[in-house]
Image 1: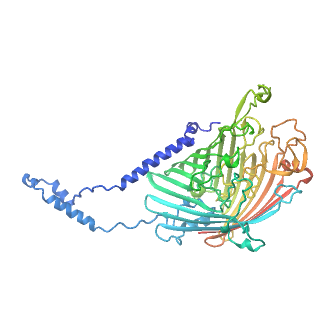
Image 2 (image 1 turned 45 degrees about the vertical axis):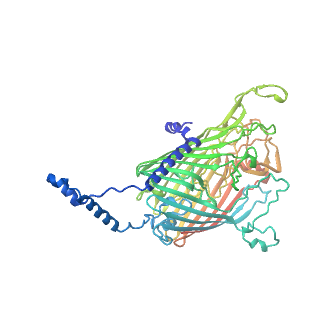
Image 3 (image 1 turned 90 degrees about the vertical axis):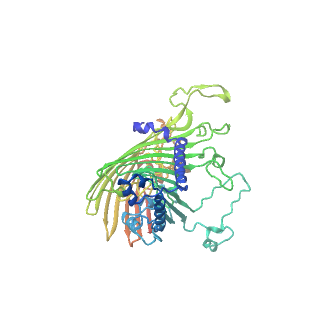
Length: 636
């Protein structure tokens, strides 16, 4: 579907090679400008006010021929310039009023973020600022799969720690650097020890991996401590234009397509570059990032993202390119139009042992075109002061090719050619992306109370074996949260996210400076297409240990789908009992800023499974699931 003609004409420009070329060209010109400015230039001789006056008055011809005085005056001017005091050191305009853009790595309530922005405690100088976040979180899950035959209750504590520094060097450049550590309490143990003693050791001891049985089997090991951000801002690249390059976090609109995902303990980061053109009424941001690299480099630069390591269906080179435009003609409306491309490369293969229908023979081009309208035009996607009614609409479509070649689904006769081992389908087709997303929401605020409603549809696929891939891909969306209205998400339990769902929800919020923020939300989560799967918060298909298999046989103790599904939309599938509702979710959330830099977050969720899950589990059906969380957030 072509959402906007202008965006369609830009589709080819989003291909990684061309966009990378454009960014490289701009950077080349810009670096050249900086180099030119650093070269020594001969200063022009100054002209004093007295000289200017004399030149303006009539002068006798003989006097005009007398020129020896000019060099003397010029020398005097140069001496005066040398005696001028040096320019005062640069003072950052962000001191005491930090730009919220540089806090995109943190999920803070509006009141907590305001304290961090205004704080001057950690500005060591007029242009150097440090910051911290320490966020431990306790979580408890019970009966996530709604299956009485499995014991899947669990609880654990994780912690996100961030240390960041912002150096606003001068009018032209600024640098931000963030170190992040994300860990689970009690996950480490000294491999050489026994008992409980070694569990208190630090993880710097390391872990031993025995690869002697399969030396070629490389095991990628996650490093809990990493660089979350490391980027440079070129603030005066062009008029109204900045350039960001390096590892960075960013989000656009309501973070439904691209967000920092700070609600999790890990979050999103992107390695690449952005160009941002911003005026009072218009902004255009273009970006390019490398999501996956298939080639290892020298001196220990190894990648885990290649078919050589992960197998034939693993990611190879994968890129993100986007163009996001915003127009704000007045304080009553903002209009966003965007085009986002995720380009995945799959190596071709001639191996006879591989299924020719796997995605090893093409390139996956997922192109997302969208438009967003809202009256939340103030900073932090909030309403302008004095207004009470807020609303928002967003629609997006996903097109492109998956790169997967299948037997033509339109060939009802299943025509074949050849014979024996060479017998194969006469017609082939390449699977096309054909998904869509829509959200409508509105709310009214009165004296601290807000009542809001929301409807979201993220398309599903009625036949996952045909030539269209119709299940919506939420890409890099933030999963839950979203201030000031806490309405960006599909429930805090992340039991089902934006893929094959139609969700209607009601949100009630009350905020009081003394008592904190109370939020109550109800989500009615149904399948968009009954044949498609139930997808969790990471867009993984949920599985279970009890239910009907692909042939319609009821089994127990084996891996089956988590809900009623019909992969090929087979009308005659045995025991096919389609279910529409996945679950009802009830969320109660309390957030309190207990001091200037410390907040507490508490959440409780009860979920009731619907017929899409009940019909699959039969006698092992457990109707209720619960989720609890408690978070301490210190950020300064």
